[in-house]
Length: 68
Image (cartoon, rainbow, N blue to C red; front, side, top):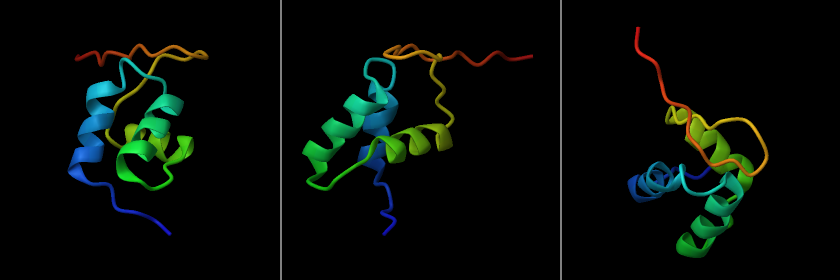
């Protein structure tokens, strides 16, 4: 079943995406919400919000958008 993301959950992802991996975000959100939040669901929601991370295992740095 698809769960609608609350504004608080989205804000948590937005505020912590640059400091935590998607896996850690999923674990923390699972603890906070009391429901199982998967790595894939966090990654997909982050991408929908337009937040990109640098490639590589364990790298938390965000990709800065360049304006032309």
